[in-house]
Image (cartoon, rainbow, N blue to C red; front, side, top):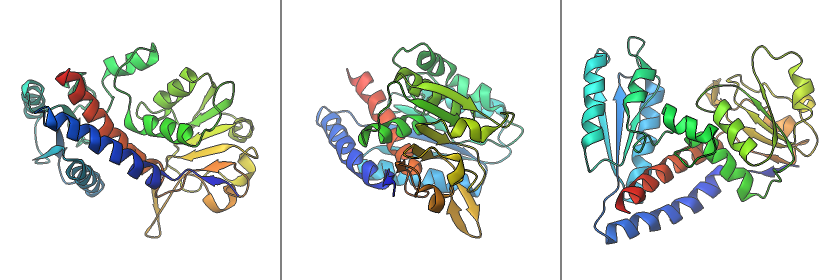
Length: 281
């Protein structure tokens, strides 16, 4: 049976450490502030934003959620981002995605100051990751690496396969693994014979968006399998990995829920605190 990469347990431990860092900043007279912009009434986005608010509250971070109506214009959104860029009380700015169809996500994200870009989506931060320079790292990839390291999963010289090429997960996690000296393959919807790639992987990261897509026959015995998927099936949340069958083959496996999702919020909080510490120093 695989070792459980328990994101809930790890995030709770990391949150205690983060709380101590917030307390240290407060003792120096510095409050930590996160501004979250939510446009429209997407139910999934509302849940994510609520969870971020709870995490802020638990750590003593000032979390402001700014709710904008669905019909908000690009100009109004950009004016708000510019205002928050100038606000000394705001250390981190997060625009909850997806935005309504009429708004330009790339343009909005590009306006956020790279120092306040706690999601790590700004092109400058993405470029820093690509060139191996220090910058803000996207939360989910950062959380995945933290999980692998917490359980001492060997990385250097190992074959890593990432399924998915999004700017939010696939590409940045591939770069992080490459920086850890893994040999990295990125697979996607056009990859021929996907299973031939996945069966070679010592570390397999699944970010496909298809429920229980990765089966036991696609996994190398003893591999570390990280499931990034969040899919709703018959009222239940399941991952991209068929947990029950893969658990019998893998050496390590992350559950859904209770895996990467918990670490994503934890790493967001870490990015906000790091931004506040940089400013304070």
